[in-house]
Image (tube, rainbow, N blue to C red; front, side):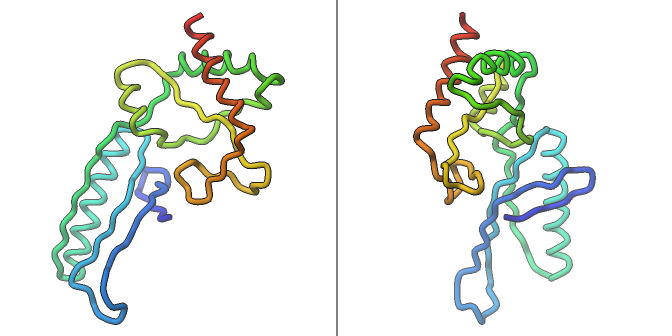
Length: 169
């Protein structure tokens, strides 16, 4: 993981790959840096875009080289609508003590990129169900290589049905 600090922007947790193929003791003619830059607002995305371009220009100038930057803001910010979110919490509270042990609000996350497109068209809310392995010391999200699901925890998926039934009556 790589953490970047731009002025007036929260730390951005970015997953990167650095590819400079070839022999380790030879200066490369070419290398590629590839990654994902999550953001929470369009303003933050615009600032990130500006800063990445500024950094690349600075690297070109400092090291007398030519860089090619391909940067695409290829998905919208993930926005949970407050009214829908409040309803989701209310519906889920009905399951606490039955099939849910707790409900809590987590830190802001970039969320699901495809779901962010839905939220541009309709009001909605994305939420996680808990299915941490009983033996796990830390929780890893489903795209992490150490993700280990506790299948018994999938009963929490009932929470999705609770929300849908509550919403649609």
